[in-house]
Structures are given as C-alpha cells and as structure tokens.
Amino acid sequence: MAAELRQRLPPETPEEEIRYHLFGLIFASQVTTDAALGFLIARTLGTSADDPVEETLRHNPPAPLSLWRFTTEPLELAGVELPERAPVLVDIGGLGLTFGAGPHFCIGAQLAQAELRAVQTVLARDFPSARLAMPYEELEQIVFGGIGGSRLKELPVVLS
View 1: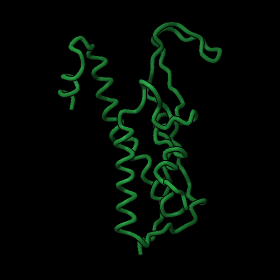
View 2: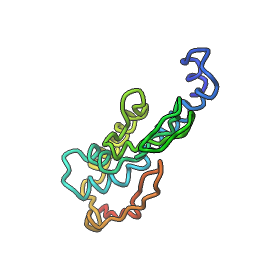
View 3: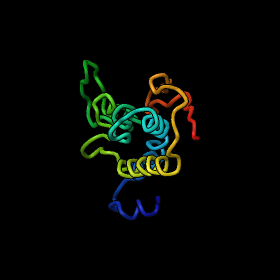
C-alpha cells in the first residue's frame, strides 16, 4: 500500500506528507468500522431505526475528532493565539460531520459504510432471531475521549 501511494503522489511530495497520507489510509480502514460495530449491532437489534448504519454513524461517530491539522501561519482561534505549525483537532462529531468535509473528507468513508452494511446484512440473514438481552436504552458507553470516540461497555445479545 505504501509503495502504491508513493507512486500515485507527485515525485516532489515530501516524505513527511507521504507518511501522513499512509497513516490516514491505515487509520481510515480500521478505526471507523471497529468503533461503530457495537453500536450498529445494538441499534439493529434494539431499535426500529430506518437506517441503522446512518443512525449509528450520526449518533456515535467512531472518530469524533479529525486527525491532527496544523496551522500554516500564526492565528487567533476562539481567543487563543496559535503559532505557525500549532496542532489543532477539529470536533467533526460535534459539527455533525461524521466523515469530515471537503478536502479533509475521510478517505475510508465508503469502505466503512460498506463494511457496516455487510455486517447488518449478515446479522439479518444468519441471525434473524437475534435480539439484545437488555433494553437498548440501558446499554452503557465507555468514552475514551480524543480521537478514539466511545465504545459500548458490553453488548449482551441472545442469538436464539
């Protein structure tokens, strides 16, 4: 993957930027789906959501903060003076932008949605009688904070 990425970027791309893009690809392909799986299963089995994938991603964004961004020049943000190259995290979950927007739109968004829809399909097809062993509203979340978002503390399911 790293070799192909390097081939697709302009030859003058700095090594630091190549590493950043590679990290983004790895991050996008694993973290999003991992964080959303428990919420998707719980929502699918315990609610009447029209689109459990969409609802899961909207209400429980798997990575509520963007990857680090860096200021390109000194600036003031919310009353705080930031120097050039200061790290900044954007609360994309709080903005309702599960996968970001514009040039910073998550490169793994379509893959994550496809993986979650595949889980939903397999769950419905192979476990049609599955249900939560407790009410959906009683499930507890563990909030890791930062870029990691939250997870369910437990997911008790009856597969009968």
